[in-house]
Amino acid sequence: MDKHTTQPSLLDRLKAHTASDSIPMHMPGHKRNTALLGTDLPYNIDITEIDGFDNLHGASGILNEYMEEIADFYGTKRSFYLVNGSTCGILAGIRATTRRGGKIAVARNCHKSVYHAIELFGLEAVYLMPEMDETFGIHGGISTASIADTLKKNPDTQLVVLTSPTYEGVVSDIAAISEICHGHGIPLMVDEAHGSHFNYSEYFPASATALGADIVIQSLHKTLPSLTMTSFAHLNGDLISPEELARQLAIFESSSPSYVLMASIDRCFRLLRDEGEQLFENYNQRLSDFSEKMKQLEHLKVLCHGNDSPAAHPTFFAFDQGKILISAQGTGLTGQELSETLRSDHHIEMEMAYGDHALAMTSVCDTDAAMAALADALLAIDSTLSSAAGEHAPYAATTLFSLPEKQCEIWQALESEKAVCPLERAAGQTAAEYIWAYPPGIPLLVPGERISAGFIRQIHALLEKGTRVYSDADGLPENIRIMHQKSLAQQLTF
Image (cartoon, rainbow, N blue to C red; front, side):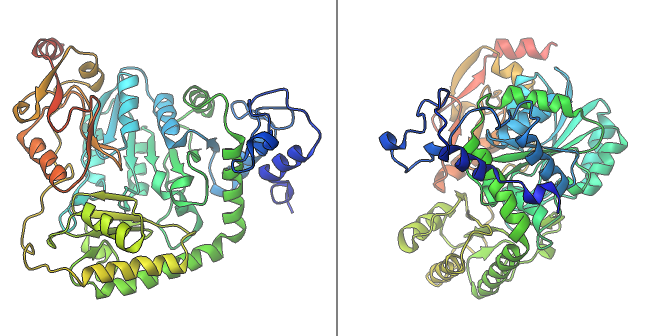
């Protein structure tokens, strides 16, 4: 039996240290004084980088061993603990692979942290538009044709960044996309934040870690039993320096990483490594039972469950069945109203409500009773609905389906002289702030993009359906910040 299966877990080491007579003349300031502070929070195992517990940024002891164990299991070149969430991994990954002012190809439905990296590093963004899924009115996958065409037109691209799976569970053809990128000598980074469970079961799509992606970022806390802010950054191939990625992680991640969070990562991995096969077998059965019940729905629809299937969605390469996206389109019910009904009448708190949709995020930790309760609640709500009134109404677009016209780069717009403009008079102007609905945190409008009449209608459609829309200056729905015309003219002359 190798060392990885016999060495103590990080949690066991922390408990042993707590039980010792060591006097903590070091951070944190609570000094593990549970007599004063109580035991509701894990003060007794919250430590700093003391002797025997290694240092995450420059790991050469137990943390290095734990991360090597992750890499061995996942089949990666290097794997890194992240305790600032996936955001720090995305920022570090983009910085490690691009030069200031360089060009980056980005799926337009990426998380806002990708845009923040573009802003911080002064990058030139070339956008990849996801295909549109007409049935549910959501983004489909990124096509291989769009990747090939973009890289042919932009051979100086330094990095390609995609999100797969999407918030709704849509998976792109990462193996084929990786091959195209590598044919141009360009690395691929996949934001797999919502697919950290892919590595553990054949019931789910294959992880990008096994499909040729050079950097893969996974949020353990989103779909696996791990505490909030815990993630992995995985590295493969020879196009990216492990030392440079580690250096960038040390920049964007806290220099005082939480041992409580790292113990959660270690515990999560050990649980799934040792018991994952049975846990995922049970999870798959619960999802199958749920899907079977959804065949009884007459008005609500559930993406790729019940009477719907991946075959009905040609823009999907694959689908994550753990995501349960419910569409109330045509029922007279908005996604927000559906979510509120589930909360108030059935005590079920959904992950997200957006436009006509509500999303449930599931995991191996959902019980039979919880999944049955969701199914029964949806059937009960469905029985009160009628599709007649809005059955043939066109979908009111609340998701970005056409690429806004880029007038200048993100950082140029954000550093420009700005003006406040009433939203109703903003058509034709250039945005100087981000506009987004959260979750999932995908920008509807990016600084430097032209504001169209369609965008304004989109904002109104979201607001009418009860979706909160955010902006940097928090002026919506009345106002939006735009580039002053003088500033825009200066940028356009470059």
